[in-house]
Image 1 (cartoon, rainbow, N blue to C red):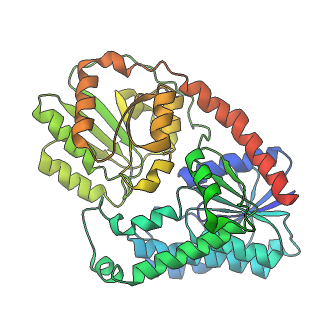
Image 2: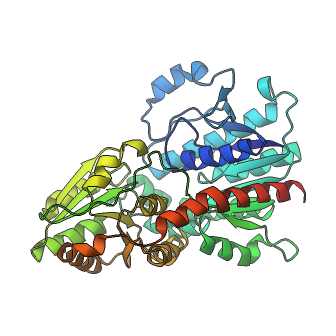
Length: 432
């Protein structure tokens, strides 16, 4: 079967969406399918000057397709550089989506005469859903949407998107008085249309899959698209199994490795560390990652006087020393209602490596941590509760020992359940 993928992010970038689809592409290729990808050149989380971007535009997109690590064929499309603001990111995502449609519609070069059996579009980047619908219509082929997170629900939280950054730009003040609402409503309508007409939808949370099945906005003749949960249990880049005894008495070492962004609002963790510190318990925080809230968090940590260090974003294969240092790892989301139907991918990695999780999460993520004995949870946006948990762990380090079935469960999801679900969905989508 010929499968055409549309994505905003792809190899050699090394983020969560990229690692997810490197893994899923290998499952498809190993099953005998031919995977072709339309994606822009690597530029995610890279600062690119507009002048240089314009000067390099011809050399940037290779004329010949590349071969990816899973045996997929990669055809590069155009893009406009991204920036830290929501407006800049929206422009980047829109231009990438248009670039994918342009490449697919022209059918020149390596796509001459190409007709896939199935098209798959990966979200986020929401414009990819619309691009997938357009390309599928042009090619008259069925399509799947890999929705991943709780969209379009998260659009309803747009007035809180910059709560975790500590700043409100002039652009945001102007746009939020009308234009932002118009864009949000339009995006929701377009996204629902793409989801409603899809042959199937994949998500990373079973709670989200159940919710989507119930939505009348996605129903056609009383039926909704099939929703399948394929969790972010892609293989780790190391085979480490951390199960170390705590060998220090200078407080509790807490690691956060991930996005320092809007949906996390990690200032809550800094406030918790301050509360514990005032009670005489040292909390040593280490943040490893990048995101729009990094500068605000660095400033707040300094103002509170807590022991917090901030490291750049490291490749997954270089995280071993941070896991060795940590007594517990923080999985942290803010209290937006749609996030109760989200499970941070870091949860699975920590479960697989037997690192104790301090979960500041609700909904499905909290259920998974407790069910599989992977750590402890507290409700989001309650620094007092988080401080009390950390003080308890510092006083009773035996609670940091992981004895649950998390590693076995993650392995089963990765090696058995996810491949079977993906391949079955692909077959059903093309036989409708």
